[in-house]
Length: 237
Image 1 (cartoon, rainbow, N blue to C red):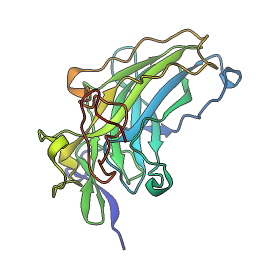
Image 2: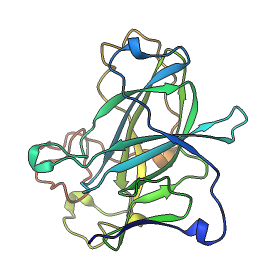
Image 3: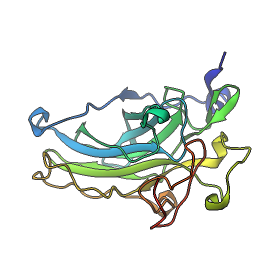
């Protein structure tokens, strides 16, 4: 049987994470479902390689003084079934109803469906999966009432300095140390149903969170089990 649990090093050290109220924003299909105090967020969650479990991305609301509030938004991306043509690798933008405010990237994890405190590790099958919590300095998004915030594409990306264009198999493909969340802009325009709404400000993304992926789709002959990297103009699958 596979082992699946979160080991929180911060908790083992006797530290308690701040209390958080985790909610999952509802996907929205038209502006008619939008409440006056809400905005719309377009966001994509994906991974640079296929996992067999769900990926989770967390944003925490930020108070006007810059401190973290209690409300946490959780977005997720299921593994899909690659042999059936669905996966967690390609861009998949969704539109969500979100209370107006400012939010910053708080954490991400694969498989463990709970908010990871700083220093925690998610184990699956006895090996660590990509997991990290950001104390500060992470990307932020602004949600204005009645507006559309294009939050972008958040990718669980392999970040080690290896040439993935010429690298096929490697031992640490499940290592949590080899991955981090990276950001890309979404190429496609806002859906017509929401295009007439005011546009919210673009996300604030520090340089270290910018993705190195330059193509829109996984390159041809790159399998879903291993990370890819590609230059613009690389042949798509």
